[in-house]
Image (cartoon, rainbow, N blue to C red; front, side, top):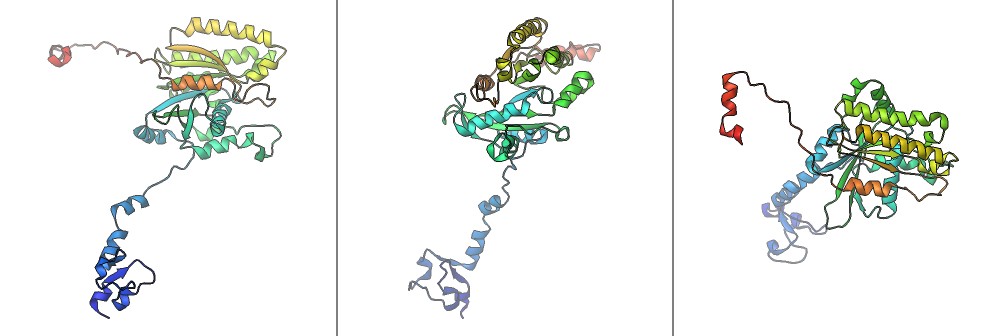
Length: 341
């Protein structure tokens, strides 16, 4: 076998040019064949930078995002942070699952679902609300304290030509918020609050229908807001939403009139005490999931989602404390052109 034959190869499986030196298609000049290549060229094709890059691509795991994941995410897309705060069983995860479920069915709140980097986590949380779970009544998997702080991601847009809104919705066990309410030193650990575009504080509507728990449910939300404001987790740049969950239970309750009166008094007092200490303080009613189907699916969540997708007013700059200029060097610094600007 000639040296030239050994040095040549063909991508066609039935061509024996490497052994015989003859083209299977009968071409006298093998180099004119589009399938012909030397052995070196074949090796180079296998080692192109494009191939190497493809080999190192990592797809998202689909799990809920950690705070470290969020830092990397923010380098990729500009996110809209929504902190969802509430006691255990108040409906935090159900709220997120209901929005995801609506997106899977059709456009929701005027937005089209683009995708999610946490699909596996969303599917896991939504499983108990589906027929294939085998449950007679829909439910939602609870968030464990051991999970710490996590985020769900939803990407949605009103039009293919418009840049999607990248929602990052916080997920944390309700026990942590209860502990922070009891011990304000724990507030500094609630990293999801500071800098959030919206802070949702849930009032458990299921507790409101019980006269013995009504006052406690309202007071818990008030204390949560107070501890966040008093410990600088919220300030005049924060947009706070007080959201009453499980409104289907309130609407169907024989105590509805008394509940409405209690809520009105609660909201009036809350606005008077905290309205001037945050940028906005608004009130919402939702029924993320109504097993009786008396209310529309994801009742109230469409309006809430539209608000989240709407950019908030530009945040004011809070000036820092005045500088204590004690030395002559400090005074000289103030007189420089840079200081004047």
